[in-house]
Image 1 (cartoon, rainbow, N blue to C red):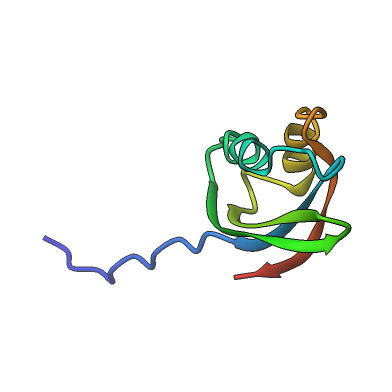
Image 2: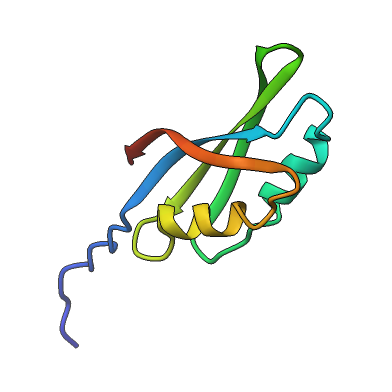
Length: 100
């Protein structure tokens, strides 16, 4: 019986992303907008906290955080999936992107 070194855990590269999703107008159902965004599911994607931030004229934007595994989920995938909800989401953008 040979005793070897314990294997090092494999390091999984992850990133923390803060997305900003703007509604089309002040009549957009923001709860539905967030529900649509959170409905995007992928292996290596974990949704985090969110908040509504005032923009002006009664309009609020959704800030929502997520953590992604870099090898599995990219920003292109997120953008492609979220912009499919065109009735609710005016094109979104990345407010912050940090490697973990």
